[in-house]
Length: 130
Image 1 (cartoon, rainbow, N blue to C red):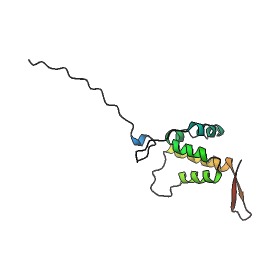
Image 2: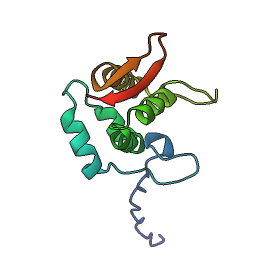
Image 3: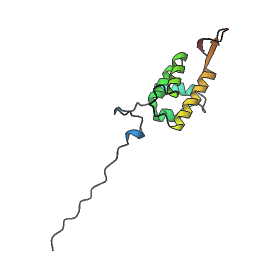
Image 4: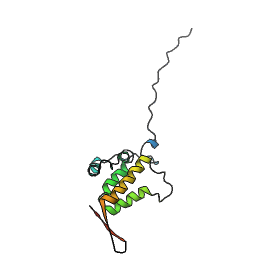
């Protein structure tokens, strides 16, 4: 009878998260981390029901940008519109929870944060922060 060598136990290989499970882009770049110093003051001023939890977790780069633009009405409104409307025609879109948070933020921003002024002809004159 041959001496059999005991089989070696090989531990299972650890799996790395796929690119689709993170907010990394197709180009292989690392996902952006939430900028706590930028986000905390922005989040603190939002009502609890408006705070975008999923956006911060899955799309920190976008949350960081919104926090940066929040007090610049024209730029923030433009950015929110760009996020909501696919001008290029080839975007995948956001997961439903993130899209809903962006829609709520957009409505809140345009109705509660900025004041819009119009001329007698109905043209928008400018934006002011409340």
